[in-house]
Length: 388
Image (cartoon, rainbow, N blue to C red; front, side, top):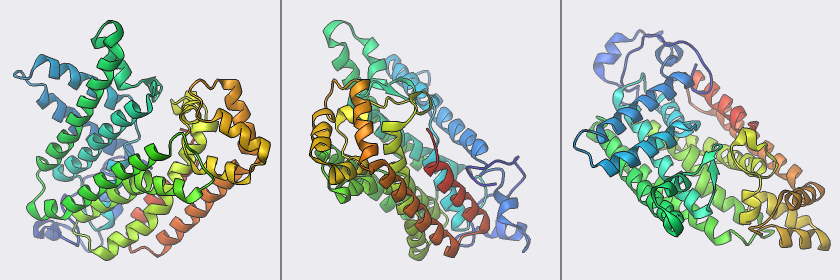
């Protein structure tokens, strides 16, 4: 099975597929060898997460060598704990799916390194996002800037934690590049993925900035909220990881376009589900408070739909409570009642369903191997019906 499903590892050759397959590998494959036989072990999600985590730990071990400054070692251990605290490893998994979608085979060290570099970059975005949102928890644990507050005393603790987290986030972004370039990719592969990585990084920054501009000012403009989702989540979480993996296997533009046609709707659905969980979810499962988004005044599609259909009193309630940094659980429950009464929650559920159907129509016609199609279809289910 590919990611998001499981099967035991099996022996397999390594290398690139039909779009750039090494001749030696071609000689060792029979005409009847299936993608399942070639990739079932590497693309089992548990197995792949293990490979990604092994690569990340090896990279951090090297950074913690005997000549490393003791203070840097401390930061590295904080980063290691942050990475170990959970996370679905969605981006490296999808990078590997993209690799297979374009004909790549096996768990070559360079491909694992490239996929792992995406997880390091993701750690950077999460660290900085938590600082910007002043979040106290992530995945049920204190955020990194809160953890780092223990490095200072008195009134400077909060600022010290924030500044340290910003620096560590910057360092992790640099290291994501270093991990990619030291992974053993050949020059042709590096040339292929560089513009995609540049685009991904630019897009997520644009998405974050648009999010900052709209935070605290929710409006009835659904398209405005969707624009943030496309840049901050759909392109960054789904489209570009698929693109990067496919490009490493030599994919042409037509295949990248198919990846996009699948990725954008399912990436939007992923974030729409996240927005619902941010208000209606179970914190014991999500690891995130259901007060954070409401206190922040996050301009989600959920809030936009509510404001669009709200009556005068309902709109007054939303505007008086959403964005209040001191909002308590009673106030949050009042907001939830308005979101239900206006039909906003149901509308977002329908938006998710529409995007799921669109993504699956793309998969039906996509020129992907059957195992890749099954994997991406499973991804649709696990990301849009999730409770965490």
